[in-house]
Amino acid sequence: MREHRYQLELPHPPARVWALMQDYARWTAYAPMVLGVEVVHAGDAQGNGLLRRVIYQMPFGRRGAALELVSEVEAARGYSYTMIGREPGNDQTGRVRLEPRADGTRLHFEERYHLTRAPWKWFEGPIYRFINRKNEESMRALSAWLSAHPEYRPDLAGAAA
Image (cartoon, rainbow, N blue to C red):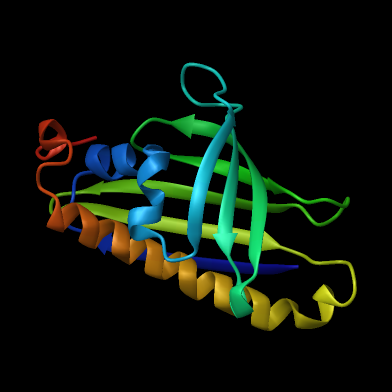
């Protein structure tokens, strides 16, 4: 099992970061690997039980898809997710947490994964180094996108969580 954790300081309030994270139609605007997101099931009023299909770009021009089940949702604070694998034992889990700061938000991201099937398990390290790098790029790009688009949810620009 591998685990990746990181945190980033974002100069935006948690409510505005959260709004963009929940705006699945805009993921392609800032996430370099994401080609599209389809909400398969909306879940409850808080978003628990949301099931989304994320279509993403893989190395060598390949495309992939992941079904992600969202849980433990706390609006403008974070959520957990499980990427449901095709085979038992290949599920990935993660958590995104937004920590309010006087100057914006500290974003905490963690993901755990374990590939069990050859040949993928032999390349688990390089595969996830690539994915981890892209995840971090996406979160930095999310912040840059918010900075470049002050017209996006200006009602949340001064909102503290």
